[in-house]
Image (cartoon, rainbow, N blue to C red; front, side, top):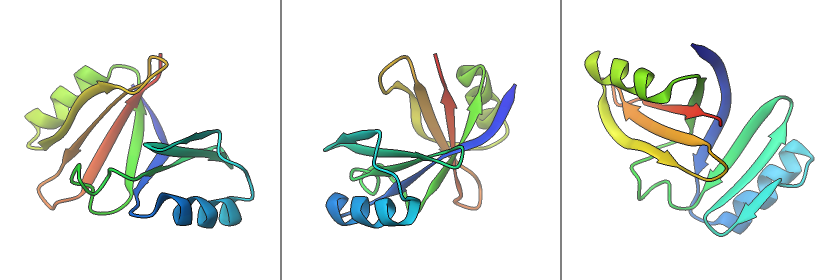
Length: 114
């Protein structure tokens, strides 16, 4: 089951500048503030900043669909012709993420919460 788009992650080159910009935009302080990821919660959305995103193949913001079975959804996307960008990975707290690229080069992310 898919619960919808609730997370978007931006690849950033300068984490401090991006953090300042999104703090001003969202008018909230980050809930996660690490050298490898900064996360904000605002208006029912999770907005992330990934300083390693470009190195992972992110060409722009990646929307993440929240799903109940990430491995099943990932398998279905690959069977439908998507190319694997990032296999299922635990990013802490039991949260699993993965991402694919469609035939047009669009990135699609998946999230499964514990």
